[in-house]
Image 1 (tube, one colour):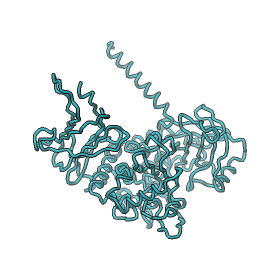
Image 2 (cartoon, one colour; image 1 turned 180 degrees about the vertical axis):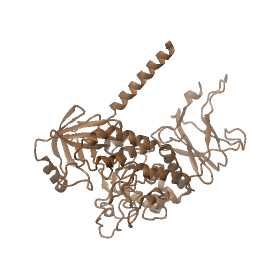
Image 3 (cartoon, helix red, strand yellow; image 1 turned 90 degrees about the vertical axis):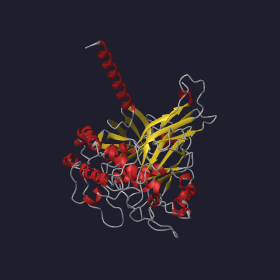
Image 4 (cartoon, helix red, strand yellow; image 1 turned 60 degrees about the vertical axis):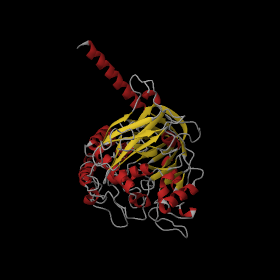
Amino acid sequence: MNKFLTTLLLLLFAFSQNVMAQDEDNFYNPQSIRSFKISFEQDNWPQLLDSLRLYGEGLLIGNIEIDGSKYEDVGVRYRGSKSFSTGGNHNALHIVLNYIDKNQNHKGYKKLKLSTALRDPSMVREVLGFQIARKYMPAPEANYANVDINGSYYGLFVNVEAVDGNFLEKHFGSKGNSFFKCTPKNTKNPFTPSGCKKNLFASLEYEEKASCYTTNFEIKSHDGWDDLIELSRVLNKDEKNIESVLNVDRTLWMLAFNNVLVNLSSYSGFNSQNYYLYKDDMGQFNPIIWDLNLAFGSFKRVGAKSDLNLKELQKLDPLLHVDNETKPLINKLLSVPIYKKMYLNHIRTIVYDNFENDWYEKEAKLLQSLINNDLVRDANKQYANADFRESLTKTIGKRSKIPGIKELMGKRAKYLKKHSEISIFPPVVEEVMVAGRQKFSNETVKDFKISAKIGKRAKRVALYYRFNSEEKYQEIFMSDDGASNDGEAGDKVFGVTIKNTDEAAKIEYFILAENIAAVGFSPANYMYEPYTSSIEELNK
């Protein structure tokens, strides 16, 4: 082996070891299984936790060891409503590490959520679903944890990142603004205050009285009801100004995700639930997806009628609820042509990134392989080992009829690819450039002159830019008129000049190209990795 190849292999090995170390340091690394060892002084802890869940709001104090790190005086309670059962030996857990010591945390996390994966014989719906969601929007991380309580094995759980202040700070740079959990307190027998509409759930239909919102939204901030009411008012009564109060693009990503993954225990299903809303420092509410154990068709209701069957789930309309006025996030937003095109592009992106190439199946198999041995030894699990093994390819349960993930998504991906609203592709964006200083020229570049070659039949090209990540993107149209830093008129090269400000030496931007039927973005991952440039680079 020559010296160059030996050096290269050593460098690659060192890089891989470093990546593995970084991944292992991530508490929610999806390829890891965490160890939780909980201890209570009381032998009757199951009865005490039952009582707290049924009759109180407090937590039972205990100690916990997480992957060898020990923490005292943590608070523990059972979580969930549908998954909870009195006397159950596999109830989901909510753990507060800083219950007594307000600074106590594990790798920065103060609250831990352990899910039983209710109605998910595959045990991968939440971990896989959140992996996909995080490609396009802020969403919780998730992996697995083995749990022991007072020396006895309690079971294998899904370990889901809490949507709390730590999450908000990480994704939005703040945590003190208006913040709501959008899950009705009782979806089976909802209480409706006098003078309020019935069965609104967390749909964001407009109501003038704050009391009409309190049974459908749980406030997590000190105040914010007026902000929530204003959001619903603008959404329903003044939709032309919706971008002043709502991050529309992020909302369209959530709706596209729900539809593609047949995630119907969500805003897109019957009950309009299982998401959060956080108002960022720019004044826009951002939806945050939550609770994915019923994704991939495990929950099947889209209205008051009976559950959808497998074939109906496979061919779920990508424009479901577009005419439903009780779902204003869908009805109002998708009535705007450009928003509808963006939404359909997001569906196309999710399908091709994750399902058309069978990535989801490979990842699901990896996750199942990881947890197989621990699940087999879990005497408290909800499903038989055979159900777990067959859960990707076959429907499980004669009554609940939980679709196999591949059984559902294989045909769903094919259906969406051929759908008339999705099969038409947008113009291709290529050769994106920012003009730099000419060779041997003494004239410095002061502004950002951006150009891109756009495929055929583009009727509109827009550039979205900002000078720092704390700002909203501004929109400006690019032209192919020969006078906008774009070469010759009609050569399919579109250009625009962005005037630099005194404060700005850098720019972040992305491009939207639209034809009569579709829009596309460049770069595709514009949400997290926009194009960047700086005056310093351009003058080198």
